[in-house]
Image (cartoon, rainbow, N blue to C red):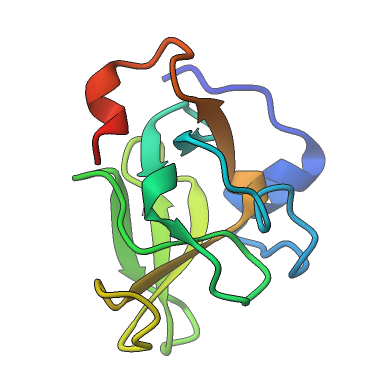
Length: 130
């Protein structure tokens, strides 16, 4: 599989499972209509309609596209890591039971792991419907 070029900081997060500094990412306080895709492989991950302000310092989504995200037990034994199901790139962590949204789920994602595509920019319309 061919992957996109990644900066050293993107590699640190996506390939090595690091976490960017809270409130530093370009998508933390970002609300436009479109799709968030994996920065490494371009797979669609989250609709902008599922993004919400959790106040945690990272972009938060209460739902991912079907089969787009894999959940794994984090090495710390407490959290659940989320990875791109297409390329296995590290995205962040998922939390449930916080009651922040009706779906009661918060995908806490590193901005460095995703890229935003505005509505209408060469993605099938069905992707935007979620």
